[in-house]
Length: 163
Image (cartoon, rainbow, N blue to C red):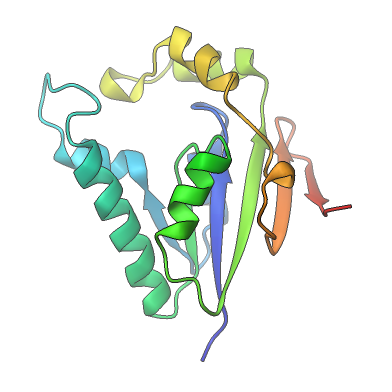
């Protein structure tokens, strides 16, 4: 049986997660929580109207690809341990290396990039600043990831290891 990888993307809206994932996807399945959300939302519906269904489908798609021997990139903000743990604890990860890719992008850059988005894809600036306050690095999680990698605004990458 092929060993599989799950890459959990971590970062604020506008930090470059989706851009990086599409550029580095290779043969991995790409599962985007926002893409699922935008498929379900109708014009003028509230952003979180179908959140339970969005998250359920997000989990289902990730598990489907893992069960079929594929590597997966899970694209959502995953800002803190509670969010990452919610994902990890709802998946069967036997035979899966779980890694985090952390986007270390200045909040001002995220806000600027976000301003170019349209419709529901544009996150209110106030919300981005609030989200920054909940962002924690996976190094502090009580979970042993296979790898943690920081991606900086300038494209530099740094692999992190616990102590």
